[in-house]
Image 1 (cartoon, rainbow, N blue to C red):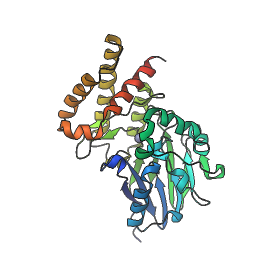
Image 2 (image 1 turned 30 degrees about the horizontal axis):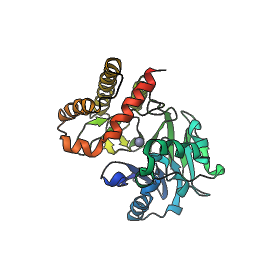
Image 3 (image 1 turned 90 degrees about the vertical axis):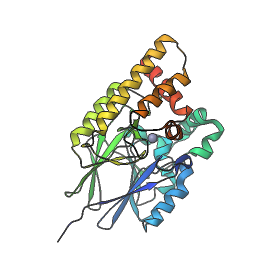
Amino acid sequence: MTRYGAKVHPIDLGYMGQTEAAGAFLVENEGTKCLVESGPSACLPNLLKGLHESKTQPEELTGLLLTHIHLDHAGASGHLTHEDCHAHVHPKGARHLIDPEKLNASAYRVFGASLDLELGTMEPNLPDRVREVMDGDSVTLGTMTFKAIETPGHARHHHAWMLDDGVHSHLFCGDAAGMRIPGTDFPTIPMVPPEFDRDDWLKSIDRIEATGVDSLWLTHFGKTTIKSGFLDAVRNELNAEVDFLTNMISDSETHLAEKHRAWHEKRAGAFGVSPELLSKYCRPGFYRANYDGILRWLSK
Ligand SMILES: [Zn+2]
């Protein structure tokens, strides 16, 4: 008998009306189906369409693995969990899935009126449908076993999920391996407040590398590998942007958005990314959030 291993179907959620901006992953093996990430609730119709194209009904899902609880990763969770489909999440994130009021309120503070259009809010998950998973613990769904690898830096409650089916090994990285400008190898790093921590993040990248997995799956977006050197590029961009913004903070004490953007265009240009392409995926809010994230981290 031949074993083919698990199938991973990336679903492009059309986040912010863009291709390859954010995704969820339908993972399937020997009749068991589960989902890594729910995406934001504003993208639920696209998620359901993606499941349908893979001949999957939401009722068939046997688990929802969340890398963290930010609304672009877990916002639609409350629509997907059911009696036989629990959300699996870092212990520090669990209570926010059950009572998302604080999470929704802080998103409103950042996004204002555009929240509903861009992300949507989170509906609560019933308490008995949320499972806390500690670092190193496993979740078994049918013939698949996912291991939680605590990977803070972007958020304190971040797990990457490892699946080794004996044929091929996968790591679902969430935001811990950065994001990628589509069609290029240029990583962009979401250093958002209030939990961004550069030192934790670098250790998380080391943990990701140490798994030695065959495939890395980025929520923003798609597949890469350790062998490709992508993680080195993530380390470089992370350190470079922290250094650049640390200097800006000590020189001017205000966010010089144009200067930040021009600096980033140059970094991206070295990877063949045009300013037009960069501006589709890194909007003014991205630069502001990175500045605020580093400011907050430096103040700790
Ligand atoms: Zn994200």
